[in-house]
Length: 216
Image (cartoon, rainbow, N blue to C red; front, top):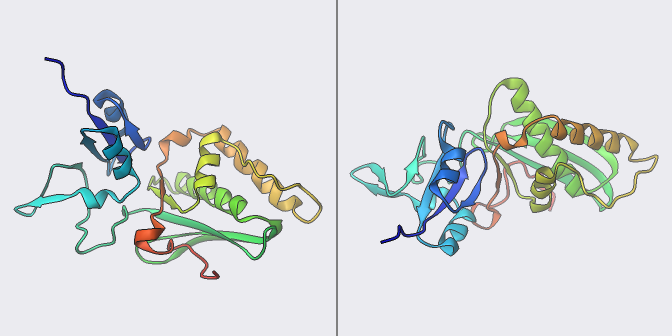
């Protein structure tokens, strides 16, 4: 009798997503501090779980977590549903294009870790992209490696592609911003981005990302 197919959701690991074998999943989580993952019987269930908080899949029995292969998992009744420690990033742009700035925040305490800008004639997507690169470079400098939350699907995709794929044209007003973009792209091309965990912030369930500038 053949072994039944399983699908593995990895919320926190060297790479995140849905994997079709334990061997692939193990590569992402084995020896990774704070690894968070779980097996599912169908691909649909695994993909649905990946879009939600890992904490939602905790089953507690006698004060112990069961049915979930987790390390350092917080109790959802006492702490926020996101992974912690972590870093949240966001950007703000008055118009599109317009003055853009970005920052990184400790999502548990709300403390601002870094803030850059504003730069003239930019876009929100550019700011989100730069915020993610800045967060990775910051953690490298500090010798830490925490998950990074962003609410921008475009920025996360650009990081994976190693390039800021903005359609905005460079001009005299945004030249400093484009210089920063080129520096960020060089950083991505000279570092192993797979060593970092970037997670999509669940705005619908958790509210605005803690790094939000509150200008909506």
